[in-house]
Image 1: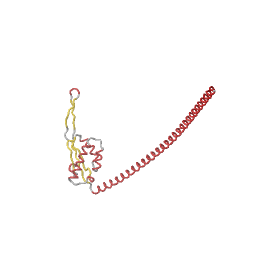
Image 2 (image 1 turned 135 degrees about the vertical axis):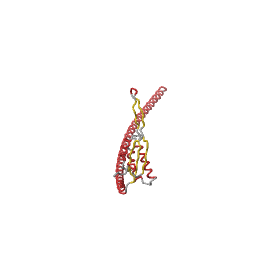
Image 3 (image 1 turned 30 degrees about the vertical axis):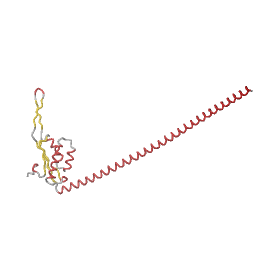
Image 4 (image 1 turned 90 degrees about the vertical axis):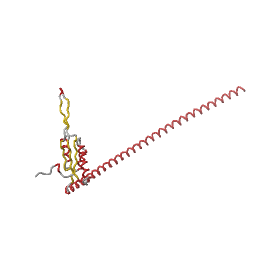
Length: 223
């Protein structure tokens, strides 16, 4: 008994013609998304490193848009039922070679088709249960990540507080040292002032004695 052909499968489809890539390269990427949910297929194509993944992603988005607007289906309930790439026309080009020869360059093209369908009720329940479990696991992972980040922030804050306290202690010690040096410098200045005052008083006393001697000499001469 022959089953349903790939191009006759029921579902919503989209097609891209004359894609500038070989059918072989497109089939390698299409094998990754066949049977996957449309959300997972979009993620796979977004992170694929193959250049042909970009036009395939556009075809998938077009099929989802057709299913949503034309058939009224929910995107979260769809999966990639079928996807295939047929060979398109080959462009012939020529490359000059040595001794006047020329070699052929074949630029391949392909036709990409993506068909999306809705899950059956049993499979849809399993998919939703798996997604809910995945959501719970993601929430738990996020909670742990937030807890780790908060603990790291508290540790950094405590370390910064300790550094600030050390800086304050060092500043206080420096202030005490400066005050002590200033006090010692002030005592030296007072001693110098006192010594200069004593010397000035001695000079004044000597001047007084000399004036007395001169006055007494004048008195004796006059007598």
